[in-house]
Amino acid sequence: MAILTKGPRGTQDVLPAQSYKWQYLEKKVMEIAGLYGFREIRVPTFEHTELFNRSVGDTTDVVQKEMYTFEDKGGRSITLRPEGTAGTLRSAIEHGLLGDALPVKAAYLLSAFRYEKPQAGRLREFHQFGVEMLGSPAAASDAEVISMVFHMFRELGIEAQLELNSIGCPTCRARYQKALHDHFAARREELCDTCKDRLERNPMRLLDCKSPICQQIGEGAPMMLDFLCEECTDHFTQVKARLDAMGIPYVINPKIVRGLDYYTKTVFEFVTDKIGAQSTICAGGRYDGLIEQLGGPSLPGIGFAMGLERILMTMEACGSPFPGQPECMAFIGSMGDAAGAKAAQLVTQLRDEGFWAECDTMGRSVKAQMKFANKLGARFSAIIGDSELEAGTVKLKKMDDGTVTEIRLNADPSEPDSLVQAIYASRLEDVAGALKDE
Ligand code: ATP
Ligand code: MG
Image (cartoon, rainbow, N blue to C red; front, side, top):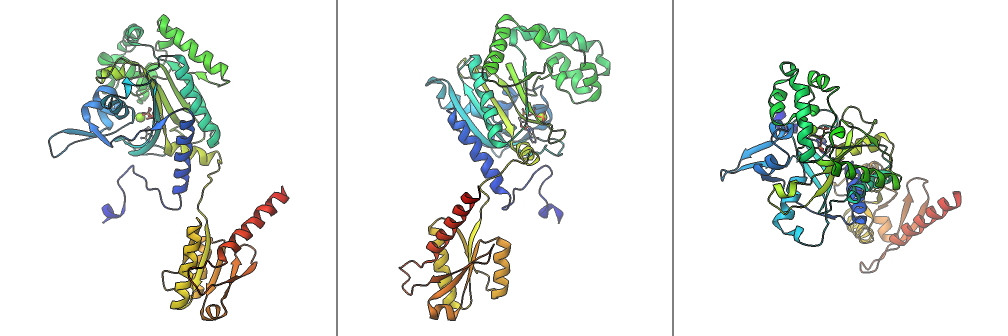
């Protein structure tokens, strides 16, 4: 039955041979976030549906079409999180974090769920790294989070372009929404059905519509940048000045409106030309009214999220290194029970030293054991049989050049064998050799 042997559409497995890449990426971004004072927050996979309706916004694609919503056995409406901001803010409000020293800086790694049409870089379960910086209204905080993404991309070897816009505040946006409404209303009959509905409720959403006809009508639409009030203009000017001062390149893209309702003022995206159509690898912005709207204090905030699947695709396409791929240090093969027990002792010593080491657990022939050692890519191998036990020595072979070192085996299991020292010595020689070559 295919339903048992094939995962649901839009999901992806990370297999053991690939997981080091995820681990590297996740560790790296969290570490860099730590340098900026962001500490990890972990929030639930599901929340009350109302939380997302309120924050993401009920005229957005995410809420209207993409949420995994169900009624739980207690009759509550529950939704698998489509993003991380709502849950993070809910948590910050619930636990009173916003009464303490500001700004609050939280970072998260999480899975998110959206019922979308799966394609390269677009999944139904995907993963995000994101941050929220709560409490600071100043352009300095916009610049700080943006510069942090730059820092991350530099260290990850990612090439991407920063695109920047401002979508104003509720005051200036009202004027803009009116102008936008008039622009689209002139061709109301041609709009897609969803947009006909959005036109009255939230005309800015029309700019985000993927339908070709709505996009075409959207060309030549008025731009928010031309409607910013004085305060929003000032803020945007300061953000740009800060970025300039930090030497961070950007382009202004007045078309960025973002697919979630909660944004105000600064919005930004990082776009790459390395991975095809789903090219936005990081997106974020300021959300000054959101905390209050969710029942918290009247405090501003700013954040972003990056799609980790797209980030990994970009790193592969950019030829970025992925350090930390696990290496099997040694395979200690054996023939017979007594030798098997000795091999198990040896791998235990190696593991205690922090090395990945393997012995036979399959009852294989010596030939098959060596084949397996090759498959593992073990750096060293040894085979213990009766004659080795009798002689109290075993030959340790370095797999890449065939060098052999004789190892002493101790009869007393409490005394370490010389295997660990031999491996350390050989590793030291490799390092010395590499230094000499440089
Ligand atoms: P898109 O325009 O690609 O649909 P979005 O505006 O819906 O993106 P956000 O809600 O801002 O995306 O999420 C932040 C980031 O999460 C995106 O820039 C992208 O990298 C990633 N992302 C969003 N939806 C998906 C998805 N379905 N599959 C994989 N990654 C996604
Ligand atoms: Mg989307």
